[in-house]
Amino acid sequence: MDYLEYYSLKEHPFSNVVDNRFYYKGTQHSEALVRLKYAIDTKKGLAVVIGDIGTGKTTLARRLLEELDESVYEAVLLVVIHSAVSADWLLKKLAIQLGVADVKDDKVELLSQIYRRLYELGEQGKAAVVIIDEVQMLKSKEIMEEFRGLLNMEMPEGKMVNFIFVGLPDLDSVLSLDEPLKQRVAVRVRLRALSEENTKDYVVHRMHVAGCPKNPFTDGAIKVIFQYSSGVPRLINTICDNALLDGYLFKANAIDEAIIRAVAVDLGLNGEGKI
Image (tube, rainbow, N blue to C red; front, side, top):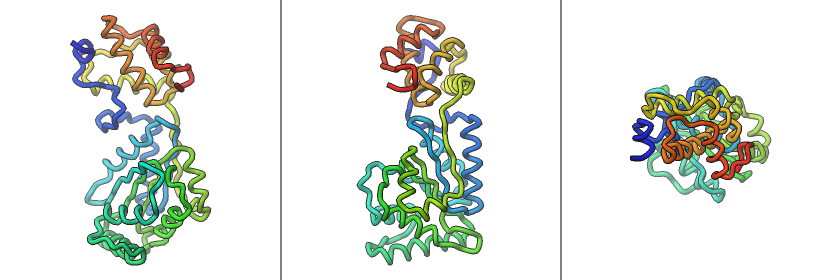
């Protein structure tokens, strides 16, 4: 027996792997989706999502991608995994993701290919959407200038491509590498940590999705979870996952404050949402 069976769960409720089935429709994320869809549907060109570590930026990006109807939008998600990305590599990757065939090495030809593809999508009545996660890693003025150049491509209805930049607060300094690009940010979303009330809703929601018939976390436990996580979803997941394991090991039907505090000590949490 493990904690899944002990608490009558069908799967692990607090994995930090992004899974849209566990998406929590809190007010903050719901409003963010509305703002981002507005930016896309009105062809504003550039929207930005900024948040601290673990606040659900990637979750939001993937949720947005999932909600964009493929018959209406040509949407892609690029994740920057290192800071050594070059402007040429990024343009080629973008072209491939948008469906450009036989991508050219010459930048002028490549930009022409991207333009033709965007024009083709526009003629089909489809909006091109490029969501880029971890943009703060693109610390290159040249790359920012390339983005500005792509945003210069327009049709009578508006921008031919819509970018959604997602990243840590450092993203502001990256945008500042090209002031004209920074001035083109049409919609800005700031993700913050959850409130104590939202933390409770979040925990209950994930337990419900995982098939739990009765939430074992007491109200007192929720208060302490909030205290040690500061409402950061990633930390909430880590604390709750460990608490379920400890609860099983201690054969506890209810997970109370004592279990959460013990878990927090084991994890080295200092009570301010930090390790």
